Length: 162
Image (tube, rainbow, N blue to C red; front, top):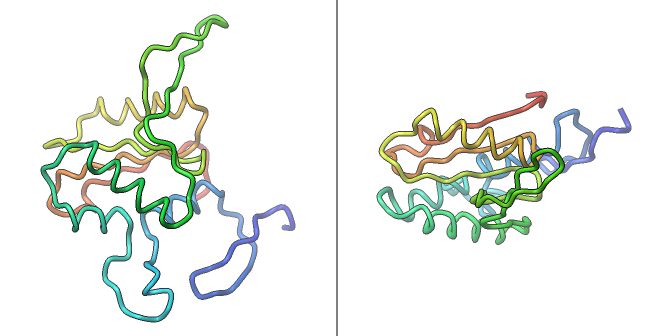
């Protein structure tokens, strides 16, 4: 059990968990409690994605949501890389083909942002391809062009305990 990461739970307790660091990071991005909530003051905007969606609303360009979500994550002290290039390696040859991931959070979670009428199967396959090429285990596909943001979040997990 000593090999499990030491984490601080929302209630202020400290303990060990068998949940992977990537999944904990996912929970922070999607389910994060606001600073006001952590101080015991009510705040309904408890998710970073929800905060961006309710502030901006649907109908904007993907780049606006990308910049806003990156800002919210960085405000929380997370490392965020925007538009990270992902090369393809074919027979030991690196091919820079122009694949770019919208956001990589803490070098663990790939976040692909969309602002489309409906997420198509090709969008999910795109995310799968990105995390395979980048050797990541968790990806989030977030479509901000929806009425309720929870309907716009798709999680892709590879080999993580949930």
